[in-house]
Image 1 (cartoon, one colour):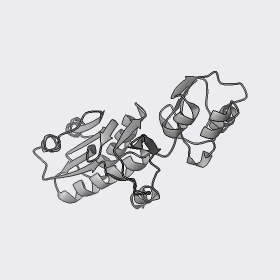
Image 2 (cartoon, helix red, strand yellow):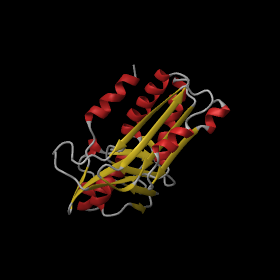
Image 3 (tube, helix red, strand yellow):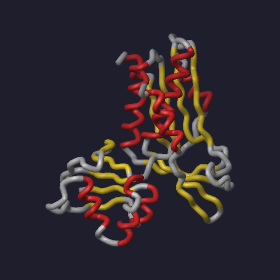
Length: 83
Length: 158
């Protein structure tokens, strides 16, 4: 699975994207966030303010309880500030 | 969608600057009676702290940005009778007073162009995945989202 990070989430984690194999006990975005934040302190800090984090599955806005699978592209980012 | 109209929609994410008068002329079709442009520019200070800034850098989510803007533009042409729509958004490093975004809408009559331009900008602000980081000497600060932008889209949901 491809995971992309943007803005300060990317900076906290220290990378803009990574490829992971979805652990068998992870089937929703919420479970993926829980899995990632337990990897180390960088992820923990990145996912600290959960209510501020927006999620996209395959480049489409999604919510925390949406199902995911190993071929998806997931993105985590803060509220957008363009324009 | 009207075949002609599909050809008159332009969405671009680019590093380069844009020329407002060139873009305005492109929006002028035979049926066009009104053109409304919005241009967003880099202001010299942070809105919350009033601290002066030297520059800002814009990043985005390639692929998703284009899809989100396309959705917004398609909604606008379903809602109003338009003759052309152009959205150009810059990325990368921008200096104070640089142009950031161009939203141009043309229609037969002015009210549709005014409303559609406002609608596109309001939705772009809250949906298109861009992020700004402000720079002041060696300090950088990610711009925080504004509740007023979130509130602005409520008028389109009525």
